[in-house]
Image 1 (tube, helix red, strand yellow):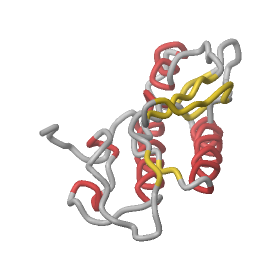
Image 2 (cartoon, helix red, strand yellow; image 1 turned 180 degrees about the vertical axis):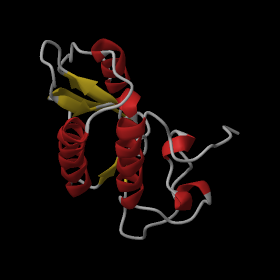
Image 3 (cartoon, one colour; image 1 turned 45 degrees about the vertical axis):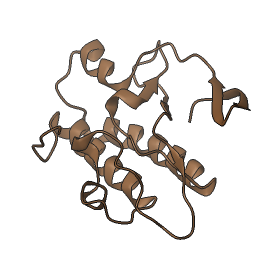
Length: 148
């Protein structure tokens, strides 16, 4: 997760100030390294860090709801930079009732229960993590989708 510098609540909105990450998002890595897909070890390295961030926020009762290449940020200057989970604009707190959450996220990465409007929880982030892994290894998404 991005290093939190400060957080505050104002008029029912939560504001989170994080450290600046200078390497861009994970989608930029493909361009910078001039590769089409990651090798297994590289993908494992990235997924481990993202999974650790998800584990941390899930323990805090937070569901990210938009895990994708463009929301994973990288540090600059190393061949395999550290990665940080960011963009919590669609994140939400989850309660014990596991009620259906408003559909949110990027359709290619959405879990089936989210698309169908069924109750969902932290598992939707784990689904998205699997789609992310698939994308890193193949440079594709496993399912075609319409955006409406």
